[in-house]
Length: 120
Image 1 (tube, rainbow, N blue to C red):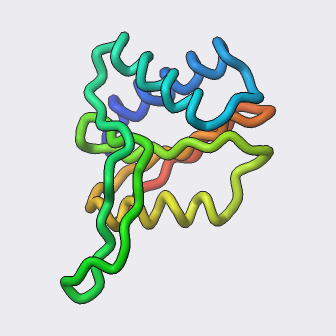
Image 2 (cartoon, rainbow, N blue to C red):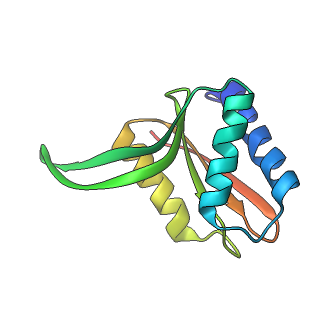
């Protein structure tokens, strides 16, 4: 799998944060905890990374990705009951907007859940 070594480390961070905090916090708490754990493990990341969406060469809008890790993997965090198709579409749009090909979608819900997506 593409970027498997990096995605495995990121997934490990997700489970470490979930095991430590459990469910019930706001997304921002999990985002901050993941940033702390990335730093502890020496994983390079950007937090709250702006993504421009272009239409025929013009900026049509922008998004903010929770993380881009090692300049290769887009990471989006949720804290809700279940992931849905909108969450999946959001991650795919982030991949399109960044030109990155691998993304991870994490949910800190009642049950820890994640999806790995490859685009292009």
